[in-house]
Image 1 (tube, helix red, strand yellow):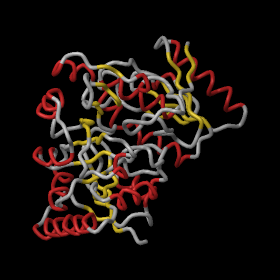
Image 2 (image 1 turned 180 degrees about the vertical axis):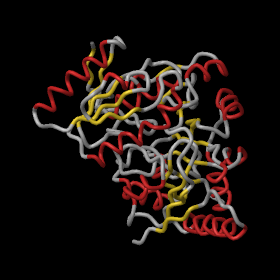
Image 3 (image 1 turned 30 degrees about the horizontal axis):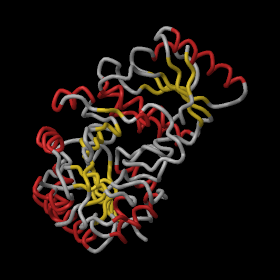
Length: 356
């Protein structure tokens, strides 16, 4: 299969605008016919297919190498598109949708008969999101179908935040990539289960736990967010069970006192380099001056965690390109956006950590 990549943002002339409008129309036709299109959202790039077509969903799983019990998120372009997909909308679900849609929040509802089990990973619930990215909503509206779209990467790898990342993983496996430039947020959407008696946070993201509770009161937290889940669980949302976000090299988190962490990483780096290994270090603006050895990459500033979220997956992918042998990463406080960042770092490290 030949994968076509088209730039669809930053048009400066009328002809360029026509070209990317034509590309969106072509992408919509591909989705309607059961094909796969990668497209940008405000969180990460998604790998889209017709969410009402079980055979198209199978193509997503095949392209990604994704386990078939790992549910897909269905994307809509307008609120009225939600009701046909679900059998019930709780009051909390309505409140959260009204407050945070369009935006980086996915809500899990009891599914309707319209949504195939191939899309939901065999579950009786469906995860739905209305993205804030205008281009994504425009594509969905043109396709006239809800679009099932996990992150557009090979399963287990760091999520793609640029079209080049998608190309590296999906070239030859999908029909089209819409290049909308780098994404804004850089980590996947927050997921909240609103199908039961109480809302449950299944995956943290840019809509933080604090923001959710300010909107609807107490929100329970699934324990799989902060610790390795058991192998016998059935994931209710993407990212809950399987290895995710991981670079090729073994990665270890170092947590504890902010003065001790950089010294520990520096010492570990020196020891591993003496063994002949190439060592990557993930740090922040506030601590990068501590490191004189190893390949050092700064995620962003601790005082502006949105910069860390934006850069995290790109840093992990760069270490793959550099073929490092091992990676040591600093940790962040598990609060506000740091909660989402630490969730991704813990999974990327396979829950390997050193406390100092």
